[in-house]
Image (cartoon, rainbow, N blue to C red; front, side, top):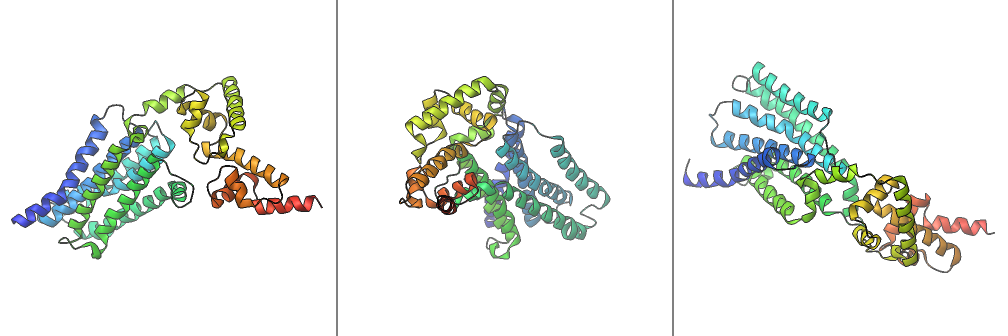
Length: 357
């Protein structure tokens, strides 16, 4: 291997090496790790094994087939790890289920059994043409499932007036990274660095460092990766029915008297400060006791006020009503109105006109 190839190998292997280090840290050495952190560690280890396999195959094609088999084993775990990482992060899971463990056991056992019955060194065609294709299909299915889990986040990203949280943006970034890297491996157009294997490894390094930077610089990832203890702590402190009734009455009175819903930039933490409770307690009150998200709860007041304006002021335009009651765009007003009233503001106004005839 010449100097140029050594430099190329170093930079292309750098991401895989760091992925192994970070993944091992998340799995074994991080204190109070959460369930999403556990699956993220598995995801990094899986992809790093896949990248390492591709690099070794490119630079050292004469190595024993066991290295290829280990790389394919890693590939088989990447899809489930990505899906479970996103799913557990969205659901704030505090426990790994038996079904998730069984899924990992199935793929590990399947690859090991095939390795013993038909080792790569003797039957490489089976691994490249059949097993590799099965793993690619499996990964594609998990990518689609993970994308479906994030559908609401993507809607927020492309809806004016909606804003995704920091944790949601990080999940999208991880998903996109896991789409980019396999694409680079598959498409010949990305083979500008001595082949797609090298280009894929270099892209993985870029994606890894970019996402690592995001996770480090965003404070709200503490809830996502640092510990599951906080979620457990608040889950164990359920708000009693009596306390929930008192807080709900106080919350409703505060919102109506100060017309806080008319502020389009109203945040959960802003409201919790006025209530003299923590943001976690307010979130728990809304989600667990009232069964509503913060946005749905506030939009309820906005829609009720919009209905009053439609009834009492026939001359005011519907778009102006949306801005008046706290929506920052016509589309979000119409979407929220239809969700709460099962009809559009226009049809609601027309129905009122017919009823008064």
